[in-house]
Length: 222
Length: 291
Image (tube, rainbow over all chains, first blue to last red; front, side, top):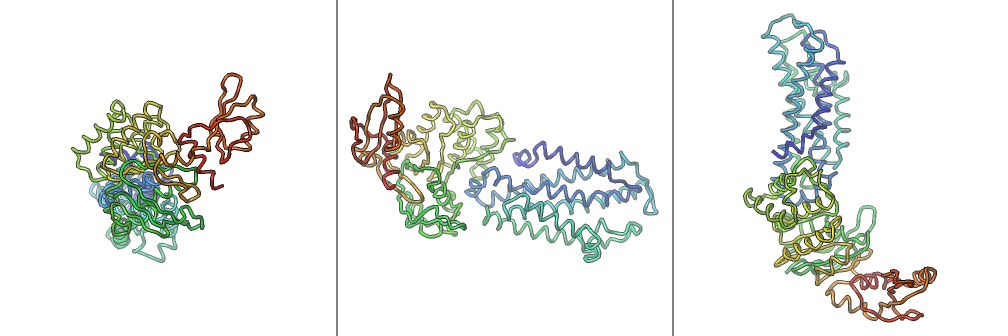
């Protein structure tokens, strides 16, 4: 698949894995249920830097003028394929990162009051679901902003501002369970509280809107 | 029918007018576009590829008006090789062209056949498995040209296609463009006057957003006739004096003397003889006539 070679060059793969390794070494966790919190927000940074050049690489390499001559449907298929490939890769990095926390920090289990393989498995699956939404949202958003301004750094910068707002006490107070990082700000002691899903629904809704808006932007801005 | 440009103007946001109320008809065959840097050639090509919308004026391709609604139809008819392009460095030549073909919507089998054909025509068959980043500048240029030819466009726009090519390859590419132009329109922009002389009958000369000349090559040469002079000077000092007064299109040592070719409206005030004008001489004559 040509898109895989285009959107996942070696240097990008290396820096993404390196990011997860460093994070799992420097970010301290005591209990295993803190791993998700430790990973979600940094993985969002990785997602928006990683995906910002999904389309803008066509502009910087001066291929966009040729792209413009191709049918919009074909162009969009290619961009979406690139996004999916990158997101799958990032999800794999997120899984590796989770494992690395166990490897390097050997966190205690039972932080939620309950322990056992079943609980750990449940925590892991919830983390995967939450981080998948997070990665998808930030990847799509950064690509959209970058395509709109025809500049990768605009995508990264725009997302960084939103990240700083939502990944803060102010964001938590202001948006509550509707915050984009609701999973990070959830109450760990209450394992049955799933109100943070609201924030992920917001991510999914905005993500759908970005997918819908992208063809118009690519067509207009090329 | 070809391309018809009427009263075309392109003014950028910074108020710079790159193309200033120009009219042009580009018939079928190879049409040369000649002009100094910043003359507006690339802007014109960007308008013709629908990348840029003109400030005013109209363009039609085979009778189809350049308008938002027709862009899809027009874009399918165009092949474009920009002046600078960096094709996917991590893909091989074959993969890169297959990808570009797929993007253009060419059926896979047909695309593969065309790739094979054009790679052979551009002497790149042996490099088909090489990564794009491993290619020399000239090879990359040829791959760029192949991608422009892949969808067999009715209107091919090539900006400096022979840059970085060795003389043999340059001739091969020129011949390929001549073959390709049969029944099609090829707009060939270059600084290499020699390339135009070898391929085109029709050409336009651009300067500061205007056409100084558009039409037949023969007529352009005719215009320069009687304005090109050959002379010999003894030393560099005299040559420098002449360079201050006239446009010099040739300067070379011939034994102890310096052979020079001068472009001048009136006979130079020295011993010289009129000589045959080449396209290069004609270009210099036309480009500096106005000034």
